Each structure stands twice: as C-alpha cells, then as structure tokens.
Image 1 (tube, rainbow over the protein chains, first blue to last red):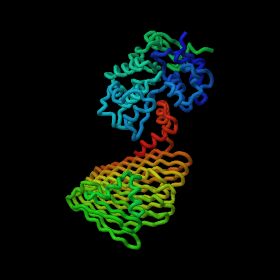
Image 2 (cartoon, rainbow over the protein chains, first blue to last red):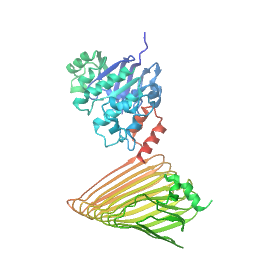
Image 3 (tube, rainbow over the protein chains, first blue to last red):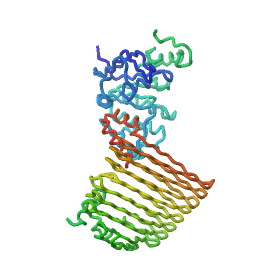
Image 4 (cartoon, chains in turn orange, purple):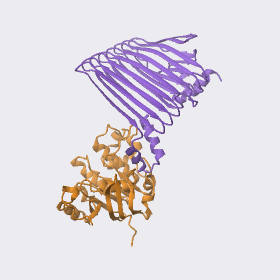
Length: 242
Length: 311
C-alpha cells in the first residue's frame, strides 16, 4: 500500500481555550487535489495554519505525517523545504519587494515570467511592480499563486484562492490548481466556490473541527448544501461525536 | 593618505563613484571639516563657499531657466575621530531652473565628531530641486549629526528630498526641517534610516501648505534594532483651498529598541485636507510567515522585509 502524502490522525487544536480542531482525521495521496468545504468557523483555516506551522497554532493532540516525516516537530521553513507551502486567503503586502523577487523566493524552480503568464498577468507590466498596497486584491492573489507555482510544491495549501478574483478569471485559478497537479504536486484546496471545488479529485466537509463527510466533489458539495450544524446556523450539529 | 583620498574612498559607502570628482561635466564641492578640498562648477551654477574659523558658509545658486543636466555632488566629510563641521548654506534655485543635488556626508572614522548643517533653500516659481542626502557614519557610533533646514517652495515649484542613513552606525541624529509651500507647489520628503546599538534619532519635519493647491508628502521609514531609539514627528498644516498633505510613517522595532511617532495635522481651510498614517511595531507576522512558507529562515525573512522597507 502506498504511503499517503499527508496523513492526519486525531488532530486536535485549541486556540484561546477554544477547541477548533477536534480529533480530525484526513489522508491525501500524492498527486491528489483535495477540496475542503465547511461553514465559516468550521476549522478550515486553522487546519491550514497548523499544517504550515504558523505562530499560535499548535496541536494539543494527534499526529501529522508528511511524506512519512513528523510534520508537527518541524519549524515552518523546514516544512516548506520538505515541499509544503501555503497561500493565505488575504496575502501579505511587502513594501519595496518586487514581483520578480517575490515569485523567485525560496526554492525557485520556475521562470518568473512563465509563472506570471500562467496566472494571467503580463510579465512586462508586473515583474517590476512592488508587492505592496498598489496592487488590487485580485492582482495580489494571482501573484501569491504565481509564487506557489514557482516553488513546484509537493503540497500546496490554498486558502480561498479565488477570493477577490473576478468571475471571468476563475478559470485561470482552476487552471493554476490543475497546473500544480500536472507538475507532480498535490493541493489542499479550501474554498467556498462550487466551481472551484469541483476541480478536486476528492473532497471533505469539515464541521466543528472534524471531517464529517468525504467523497467525490459533487457528493461533498451536495452534502454540504443539505446539512447544517451548530456553527452553520445554530441548529445542533448531528455529526459531533460524544 | 590625504583627506581628499579618504573621502574619495568612502564615496562608494553612499553609492557614489569616486570618478565623479574627475568628470569636468559634473559640478562638485568636497569639504573636509572647514576646508574645501576640491570644487568644480558648470555653466548656470554658481557656488560661493568660504572657509571661516567657525565653519563653511556660502551660497549655491542655479540661474533662472537653467537645467543642470547632471547631479551636483556635495561631499561633506570628517576624517578625524573628534572633528566638528559646521556648514551654513543658502541654496537658491531661480525661476524655472532645475537641478538635482546629491549630498554625500561621510564620517568614516567618527568617534565623538559633530556635523551641523544650517540650510536655507529657496525655490522660485516653477523651479525644481531634488535633494538626495546619503550618510555614512562608520562603525563607532559616536557621530552627532544635526541638519536643520528651512525650505521655501514658490508658486508651482517642486521639491523632492530623500535622506538615507542605511549603513554604519547612526550615532545621534537630529533632523529639523521646516518646509513652506506656496500655490501649486509640491514638497515630497522621504527619509530612510536603519539604527542599531544605542543610536538615537530625532526627526522633525514640518510642512506648511500656504498656497492654494499646494501639496506635500512626508514619508518616513525607520528600522531600529538593539537598543536604538527614535522619535519621529511629522507635522503638516494646510492653510488654503485645495491644499493636500499626507504623512506616512513606519517604524519597525526589533530587540530592545524604542520608537515613537507623532503625526500632527492641522487644517485651517474647509477646502484643504491632510491625512496621516503611522505604524510602529515588529516586522509584520504574516509577512514573515509568508516568506518562511517559501523556505526562508526567520533571519532571512526579516532581512528581506527590512531591506524592502528601506528601499
């Protein structure tokens, strides 16, 4: 049996005395695009931050194996060097740093001009611009994705990659997700947009910090639409184990 | 090694090529302490500087309608650890004239030295002056630098200044600028400082927008580490219709450093507007983590963020 790329077992995380992830289990195979659905506050972004090793997000129990290595024992930059990266929902701004520098960071494998074209930005117009407040939200998102593409990561965690992207450009985002897979990578795709979720090979629904449903993307989207939980609309969540 | 040679060799510390002093098409003044070591002028530019026991005093004048094509280099230096330099200068850019001044302040061996500048700059209507000032203070940290300037910007004139002190030790830096802007005039003041150890920075920049549609921007970027301290005051007053001012101050604090920012805005006309933003704190956490998520170590990430801010 093939070792999973990502193997999460019984992962629990508390932030400010609130249990955000509650004995969560999830596995991903190499080359898989896995969409993660869930209502606001269900724990999707916490899972992303915890996997990446962001400050303030520590597991209180459980284990995460990434390519067989104990991920939780590693500092953030070591996780990145193993091939894990994260694109934030609201990407940071950097005064003075050019797009060229930004998309060439870290373990660069791709040509900056090529990755900008892949995200639908003209290199001539953007390479020498700064990754600062002068960029619109949509432009900044695309540059974040270009930076991820440039790394050719084994696993890219994309937190709402289509947020702030105009409707006509959603196909670009879908193409980028597919390009990450085509380059041999995997994607953990956090999204609220159905057309983006449907690009995945598998999908899971997160509810109150647990995976409550996994299946193909269509089934999972339908399941998410038809169910409710305490974090969604105030009804009692039927999935939380006692 | 002569004083001129020492200053020549220090020029690259502020990004200047020593060969600029040999080019007959480039105006320059090189002064060590209260002595002028070298000077050259070009057509349309008058430089009258005198050596006195109290300091260097004189005038730099760009004649009306003249555009000085290549930057004028002012190189002020101290080559003794405890020397004092006092400069009193009157800069006049006459009507419609344009010039760019690169001021190189070089104090490579300073230990308990002092550099004082008292400047009055007058830009006549339609004139334009870009004043870029680069400092290198050596590594000892005993330098005291006190530049004071009053800058008068006439109707439709444009003034841009860029002060940077990014390498070596700052020591004690006390900048005090007062800028008055008349109708349709523009003032843009940029300062970038990287302070370490026990450096102490006091930066006060005041802009008075007197004329209609006068505009200004005060932009300050200070990075402090170790036990450095900084007090930054950006004042903008708008007194006429259509006047627009903005104060933008960012201070990044690391180690045991302390920083304060005081933006003061005053609007005396209902058709004027002044805005300000100030941010003081450590390096932005998300920015830091974004770079680490690309494989940079925390130290590499901080260095990149700081270098970007000071660019």
